[in-house]
Length: 259
Image (cartoon, rainbow, N blue to C red; front, side, top):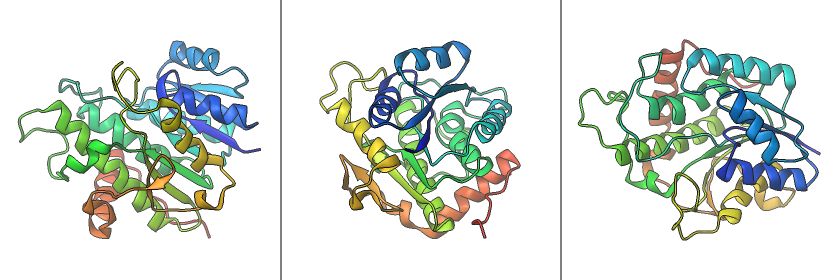
């Protein structure tokens, strides 16, 4: 049995992944952005081992979430599922940061840097990441005209960069990114054509699967098969620049590997 944290698990893919893992006998801790959403996650995932709350649009709350997770852990796996989508208007958080970037990229960075390293990490990518651009000098969209779909695609590209950076920096941790497909969630819409369960199954498989094919790191997967990622994701210089920018914005350096 593994102990697993799934962020953003009040509904959609996160909730589905939590249910799959619970059905396999794992101790799953769910998460919502506030107490109400955490309660929704707990109610939607019968048998969950607990629930944590924390708004990933707040650096202070993300730090507090990491502290509570460490007190509740350690975890064998963390699924960084929480995200906002591609229809968002530009807005700034209480930290003065563009909210899509903060929630989708900076929060998983901060949780990864502050939590006790698990054995497995899964980051949520998207097929849209292939149309993303690396704009590390304009992450806040102050120079560019706002485009919600592009901001989302950029954030998902950076999530895959982050997953691969962690895999390279922490060789003892299996760190991978998942493309769940275009699935019928609040973000994807009711008419999305791909299989919701299959999209969640890849997350669960990477988090706790015993199949030798799941024993990979630094990979981008779609429906449990390796897929092609944007060329920038495998560039060590881009990975290191992203980690450096995130460290500067959060005040938390990415930790070295455990001795």
